[in-house]
Every structure is written in C-alpha cells, then in structure tokens.
Length: 257
Image 1 (cartoon, helix red, strand yellow):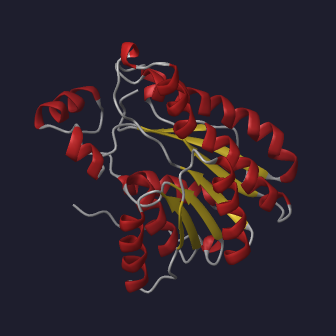
Image 2: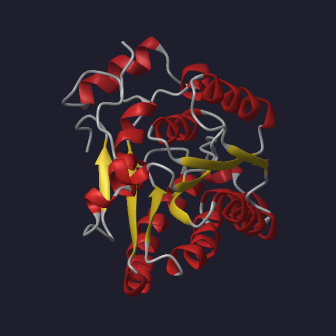
C-alpha cells in the first residue's frame, strides 16, 4: 500500500536541503519527500542514471528539479566542493542528510586492511566531512539541521557486517560530539537508526520470504518499514518543529530493538 506524506512543514518551502546518496533507496525517498515540501533539493550519488530519472520524475510532478552531481564520496575534496557549489546555486544549506552508505556483507576474515579502510571511507568519513562543509553555510545563516543515518545494527551487532556496524556505531558518537560543537551556532545534529528498510537493494539481494517471516517474529509491528517512513522522520528533524532537539538518536524499526 502506497504511503502518502501527510504533514506540511511550511518552513521547509524554498529551503536548501543537501542529501548524500540520493539516487536510490532511502536517499531517493528523501529527495522526493523534501521536494514535495517545496524545498530546493541538491543531492550527490555515483549512480548518475538513477539520479537523472529521479530528477525528471520529480520535475514531472511540478516540483523544482533537484540539483545533482555525480560524486564518489570517498573523494573528500570532491564531496566538499559539491556542497560548496550546491550552496552557490541553491542558497545556504538549511539541512544536510548524511545518508550514503554501503552495507555489503563480509566476514571478519574476508576484511583486510584495505577493505576496512574502504568501509570507513564510504560509511563514516563522508558524514564528518560533509557536516564540516555544511556547517560553514549553516553557521552564517543562523542555524540548520544535520541528520545522520546510522542503523540499529549498531545496537544489535549482527553477523557479517563488522565494518559497516563499526561505522554506524561511530556515527552515533559523532552525532553527540558535533551537536555539542555546533550548538553555539544553532546547528542541530541528530541521528536516525532505521531497522530493516525495504529498498530495491534489499529486495534484490537479501529479502526472501523466509527472511521476512523471521523478521516479523522479532518486531512488534508486522508491516514493512519503507523508505518513506524514514523520510517522514527526516522531515520533522529538518524542520523548525524540532528546533530544541539535538544530539539524539531516533530508532525506526517497527519495535525490533
């Protein structure tokens, strides 16, 4: 059943929202949700094909065409430059969504030093450097909101995800630290910890009927957690309705944890 966005956040209209990893999955739903609020959305991803289709679909629905650049987030200078250029095009950044991640499965034995560094380079480092770059814009504009995507795997410690889980756990600590560092400038920093969100990637790689039945045994709410559910929480955390909330983590997992 398709879910609709019900709340209207008037303060998001015409505001600049920057999203990493916005071409597919949760990121794409974020792009759609903020565009539907009348925000000016910019996003980066390495999948330019999906990004182009997403931008065209949003424009066809009457919203402003998002700003997109193909960026490998492990290239820190390119990441920082994209935020700078997007701000020059769309104005000061009102909210940053640090969404990009790679949850490829691996056993600890498979992960050598190079693989470990690569995992941190995509799952952890961009959160810090994108936040630094966005803060420059926010601090000159009387505040803003940084929303970091962590995961309930950081609370559960599931198998075959040691690099990913380490990064997601570190994001929770980074969120607390930056909330303190950036609070003086009225920049809020919070984390969202989703459970098993049913994206196309999950459907393609891991969501079997058997796996879903096992998941249902572990949750209080038996419906699927969808990307739009996470996007709705991000809308609230980006808006001024959450103006006194910072340094917090918000779990959305149907009652799994």
